[in-house]
Amino acid sequence: MDRIDPLDARILLALDDDPEATTLALARSLGIARNTVHARLRRLTDGGALRGFSRRVDPVALGYDLVAFVSVAISQASGGSAVAGLRTLPEVVEIHAMTGEYDFLVKVVARDTPDLLRITNMMLTIDGVVRTNTAISLVEAMPMRIRPLLEAAAG
Image 1: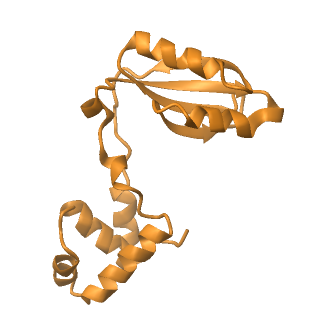
Image 2: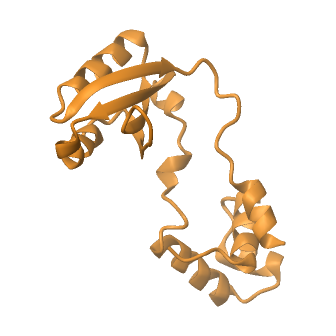
Image 3: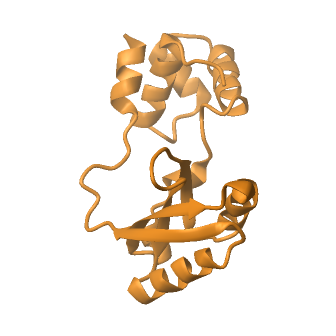
């Protein structure tokens, strides 16, 4: 993945301010060539720095009102198959490999607590998953944010 330089950060901040801005509008507001904006956005997208549009969709809008974090312990011999199995569950929205007592921290969305029980029971049927521990999020005190990092990068 390419590093974001100050100009990339300025382009992304402008997009954050107006997500529907055209390449031409971005170029004019930033005082740079349209082709420069287009090429940099393409590079950021192709390089994985600029993620897919679906990451902006709130799961609540799809009926998933509950968020939980599931710590997952796996059999060390089957880490790859455990991750592959977890990825098949549409309610699994993030998986992080961890240090400590558990191997993965899995962010899950569910419709309600019975749905969460269904999801965690399905997780336990996945080859390589040994045990889980679930914590329900009561409220998102601060959503993930990147803007302050972009502002620092933009100078």
